Amino acid sequence: MSQKCHSLLRDSHGKLLGHVGSVSVNLEDRHIIPEHFHPEDQLIFASRGVMTVRTSQGIWVVPPMRAVWIPAGTPHSVAMTGHVSMRTLYFLPGLVRSLPDKCFVMNVSPLLRELVLHACKSAKLRRSVPAQRTLIDLLTRQLKAAKSQPLQLPRPTDARALKVVLALWKDPGGHSTLDELCRTCGASRRTIQRIFLSETKMSFARWRQQLRLMQALRLLASGEKVSTAAMEAGYDSPSAFICMFRKQFGTTPAAYFRNQ
Image 1 (tube, rainbow, N blue to C red):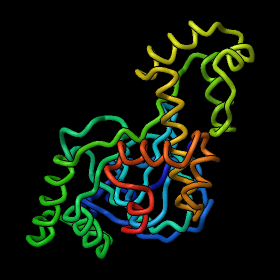
Image 2: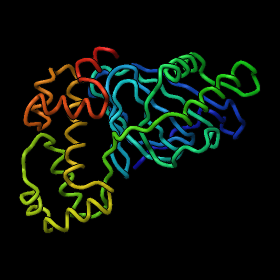
Image 3: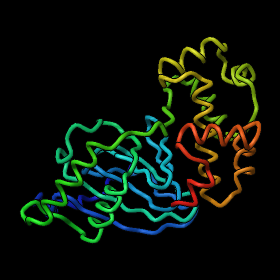
Image 4: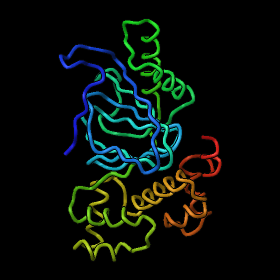
């Protein structure tokens, strides 16, 4: 059962304490924050390490220089890969308008990064303080302009498809065929393909490809070599993985993590 966390922006009587709150923490590899939810909208950013956010709707992998937006009231857990420097901002609901009402991973521009880090120097920011109001306005504008990243694995609700998902999640680098997976879930190949497309908006092949990319990201963040991460994530060769990584992030894995 999800645990509700107390508001950082209102006291026990509902009195407003601030419009934006912050928490900064450094976490060890494999640390897990159990499922919980907040009454505020939340932005989680890590300048180092990779976070995996899970909700009932899906899984989001957050590599360095990305952030995940979590709307108020969304139950979620967070798992760390590598040593993670986590910086979290909490926004009064309605303060950042026009963002999706579901989780998504966004690019963090150099300006947004500096704004987040600067905001985290204060436990709370209030719009009644001129300098803090300016910072809040800059943050909200940058968040609205941020581009989303396709680092999500939507979770199907059909019980048969969920069996396939759980089998793949236990062994992301495995090479079981779809026909083999279908025999364990009691559905035909065509049925599972149809369910994935209708419930996740991704083909089964695309979903599996995304899972492998996410697994490779976690392995790289924990210090594995590119060749090891590629093979353990199920790629046929390191070059195939590098090609996919470059397509997704615009650079090679080595350059990406070297620059964080």
